[in-house]
Image (cartoon, rainbow, N blue to C red; front, side):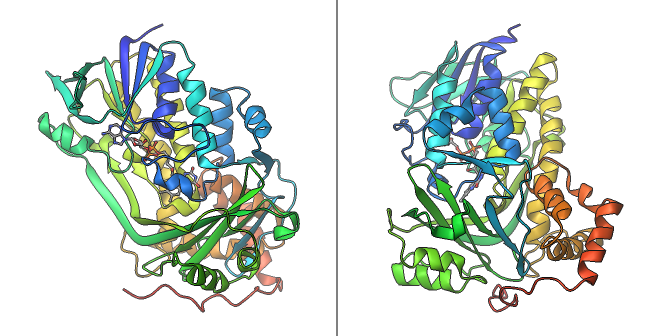
Length: 451
Ligand SMILES: Cc1cc2nc3c(=O)[nH]c(=O)nc-3n(C[C@H](O)[C@H](O)[C@H](O)COP(=O)(O)OP(=O)(O)OC[C@H]3O[C@@H](n4cnc5c(N)ncnc54)[C@H](O)[C@@H]3O)c2cc1C
């Protein structure tokens, strides 16, 4: 049953496309407004600069996408994406050692961000009633009497667009707080946990002998070490190699500096790969000031007919690879909310979205707070959890049950408190009493610079 005639989505990236997918079942017309012109599938575009960097799709994200677009995995594998077990096929270095590898049943999909987004875009725009207007910038909201009634466009030749529902998916730089203020509402409270992170990324040709046949290699967030890296397989027999540095210890973008940074990582595998693999791109930088969350659910007054989703709502430290999965979960929440009608839609949606964001936010921010230089709410619970998780990683070098439990949380398939279950806590304890595999290199030589 249709809830209205027209819904408008601001932004045609993953958050906007997934929201459009949910809206298509409930509105006669769904119009996606995107500032960029869409390129061919698999090509980068200006509005998604992060698409040039390692972009992992978590197991939960893949499952939701498959639900929204049946056959997605099959189609993308046919285009060169690789479906694989994220525990068996990925070498994961954390807190001085490697996690055990074994078939876990947690399936991920390795592919480039432009291929994933281009595919999803094709499926969404093929839905009845869905269209995209590209090269169009939204400049504000139309509204009055407690309702948003459309969007203001200032591009020549395009008049304002009326809509029964407007969904803002314009990303981290969303102007929604300002637009709401212009309509007489308060701005949402904003939380920012500064980590001064930077990525430097290069694409290489993949050779069969690389990384011992694994499809991915991850040096996780390893505070107090400031440096990390990730290598992910992509379509076209390519690797995307992203080096990451926290708290101002940024990876250089010149050839020699990039190699030297790779060499300084706590384990040699990434350096061994990049030192003689064939580069297929230049080295591209990305700066990420910190995780940012806007608390729309806490506003006392909010107009009907307007929602915010994706990175515009919450943008996470990207090393945890959560953004697209959370955007997909929010789109599912939107679909659920619309099934119950549009009465109090904003209040219901923001409440559900806040609950969805809580876990990934606590994972990302909780881990960032292990750096003493990061400012944020650091209560005894956060300190205990970080102490405990560090020990869990040590025990996970041998204990499959702990690897599985950790990966379920990291893949947003289980809530973080599940790691504290008594039977897992005993395994953590036991795993730290027994002598464990030696660290590849004692952690600590590259600590984050003090502020
Ligand atoms: C460096 C980096 C690495 C990441 N790695 C991962 C990863 O490994 N896994 C993962 O799941 N997530 C990752 N993410 C997060 C992921 O990219 C986002 O969560 C995802 O793209 C969803 O964001 P979005 O669609 O809400 O916003 P965005 O992707 O930022 O898209 C916003 C869109 O809105 C358009 N737009 C903006 N303003 C306007 C306007 N006024 N009018 C019209 N259009 C407008 C833009 O052109 C753009 O297309 C990463 C992010 C970064 C920064």
